[in-house]
Length: 89
Image (tube, rainbow, N blue to C red; front, side, top):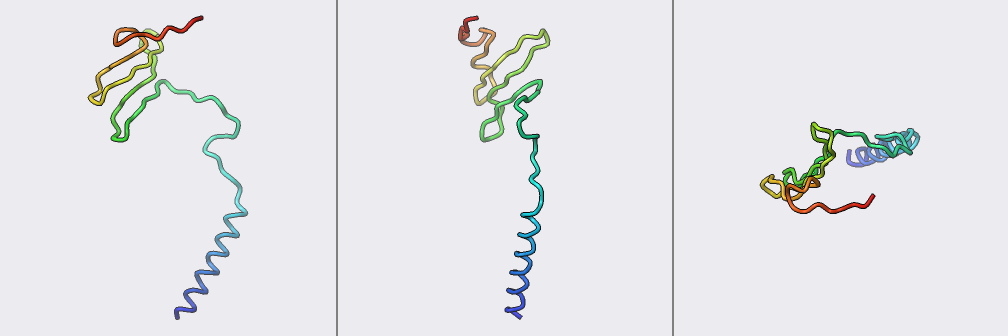
């Protein structure tokens, strides 16, 4: 009985490997696509708490915010929370 089980497992593994290797590769996203569209990007810590976000305000201003572990804004690109890093044009 044990020999039959081992033989069956070996045949099943061989057949599964043969079928699996003949299947076409499937991608979650088409190869070569380099653009990601989103209304917001949220950064989470290991506990799942929001620690940052990159979004657009209702007035159309793009804003990057960094949050402390309690969810309070510690820095953002508006200059209201910490200093703004100047970017030359």
